Length: 207
Image (cartoon, rainbow, N blue to C red; front, side):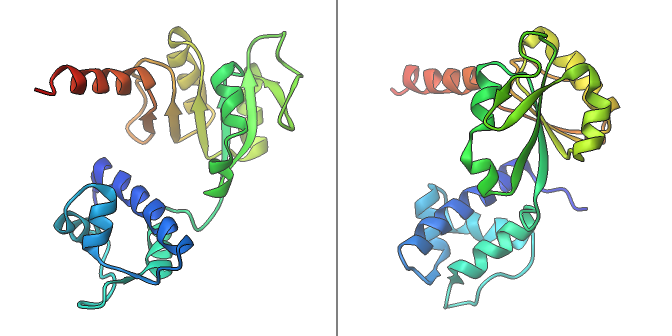
């Protein structure tokens, strides 16, 4: 598999959302210039991103919006569903179980786990909170593909280790710390504090 940068993959995700807006408006064809304007980049960058994955559209005619959206969804693996587990039934974990965009894109929350006896057995949006001590059994039972870590920072590495041991190869980490995992395990980070700090830098350096 050829190496594609994270920034390119993120832009592909943005293109899907831009195309959804166009399709909702009844737009059947779009140019790289229009996509670039919608996503705040250059048309050359749009064409370069697409070039990594083959030929798209027709020169002089642009791209069919529905066809391009489907092609990008296939590139991102959205032609199938993925089973997801959440570790941590706190505020973030609870909110994620009710995030409609996950299901819309084929990410199905099958499992939520916690180690707190006071939470285990309770119901959240149709899911029963399971005991994280049974992670190996539960991951296998629910055929989990992706795990989301939503626990305090001091517990995140231990949780990651156990998920990897259970066979998980893809992790989204909401805990504010870096994780050490084997080279064949993919980890992505969702840290709102880091994003806020980036905005703080922008505001502080506007001049």
